[in-house]
Length: 131
Image (tube, rainbow, N blue to C red; front, side):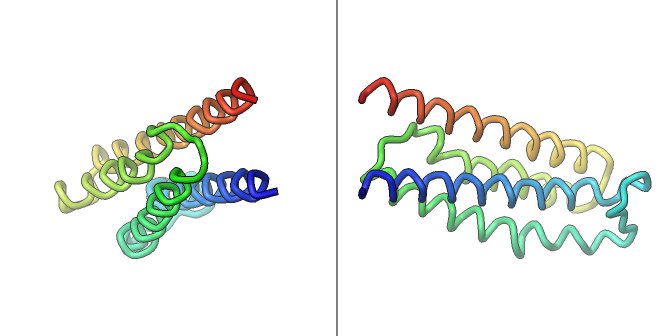
């Protein structure tokens, strides 16, 4: 029973990660006039450091704590912390909302979602092989 709770917690944490990344991707693509969530002012990018970064930090800490009782890859533990750097640093370093900054942030959002999905699949495959 405890193993099921750990598995469910693992799935919930990774699902929350994907939701946060989807939200961050919407923020990064919000300056595109062709999308329904277009917003021209740019203040929506404050949601990255105010909402996304703290949530990702909490998710990373929760995954680190869960990793002590649940077998998961180190990549899965590190992904939220790498994501914080990949999403937040372009905004801080550039200081503006240039097309390059937005492209880098968008790329990292999409890439890290795929990395997380890969890490989850790898974790579940290793768990199935060990049983």
